[in-house]
Length: 190
Image (cartoon, rainbow, N blue to C red):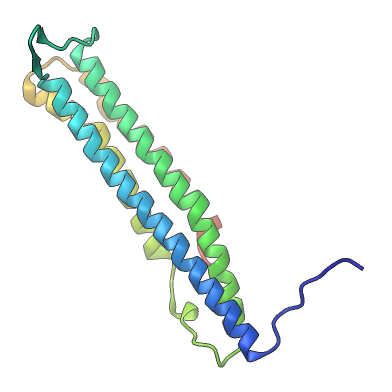
């Protein structure tokens, strides 16, 4: 016979399992908060890069030249910021939130099986948290994408505006469609 782990039977073993599940939930929650902080920092880095590109620093030999046309470089920075924030969103929601939900479901199951446990997981609903996170990331990504265009427009630079709305609209529709598709896999079962 292979080695099998027997399920907890005593109140002490059950409480130990619940405590470990709670610790894992807090750890994954902290990881997700870290990714959200990183996404905010990423947006600030995009703004810093935009400030640098639109107002280059002076050095003794003159302005620093990067060899590319300024509007193209500024827009490329915005697009890079957009996709960088979306990658962080995917790591947060697709990877860590799914792990958090798996621990949540196990804690939920233990609460159902043992009525004497605090029923905290039965009172929780995952929809507002996941939708808030999605709106947070998509909002940051959209700001990262739009900011360069708006700054170039403000500066009076020539910008290929005809495809701006179409690109952002298509990207955001794809992201929101992916979010609602993923929602089935990352929300706790009721």
